[in-house]
Image (cartoon, rainbow, N blue to C red; front, side, top):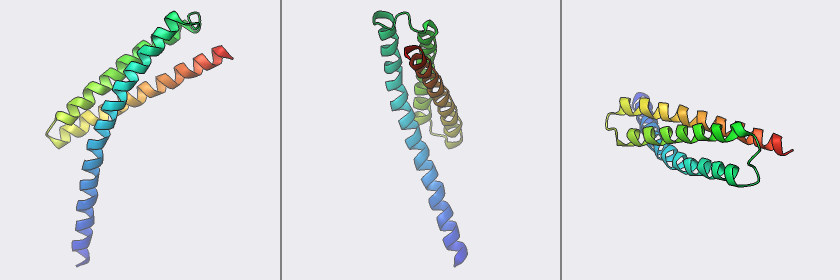
Length: 118
């Protein structure tokens, strides 16, 4: 009897992980596509606003950042469309790492801009 309930809880945990994985792909897809737009908006503000002379490397970093968010968006889309679970997990993990790398670059650019403004 205890083995059956243990197996049941393992099946529920496995189903929960699969469901969370699908949700993660959707979140990476939607947020990374929005972040591409945010990066492009900040690049335009750097070029035409008062921040033109502020940290010229920042807009180059944001351009790379926008490309990384675009890659994360595309790979998460392919993960959503993939039927095979093992392949989907690998693609999702790749999208997650690219997304985290892009977030770190964006945080670095924010630090540079804040440092230059102070």
